[in-house]
Image (cartoon, rainbow, N blue to C red; front, side, top):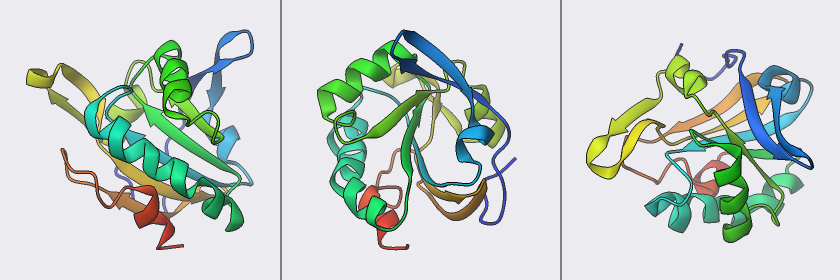
Length: 161
């Protein structure tokens, strides 16, 4: 499957840290009947993910909410323990951004958004993209080239809605 405006994302079971530890959820149930931002990045605690990508959504979170966005989801091929620590260290958790893991990378691979950069220690990670999803349908899609972080930022996506 490829990401395209007017399309729907495939079903996926993702994981996030809940009050009592890791919890799985169905992506389709989380998107149904709601306006949601879903953005993906290569990994927690990695270069531009930490210094540019997540901060761009922290800065724009309130502006997205003012435009009717009910949830901002950051997806990464990481486990929920790492994502919890990263969310706390970056301020993403405080900003109300949901950090979810595609722990085995199956969702990312199914979208054709996986990449590998062994020289960086990144294997089966997600390329950067940012989506506006309304009731499960993709209404905006910004997909960066691998190794680039510009059109999938919070500011770039916000300018389009």
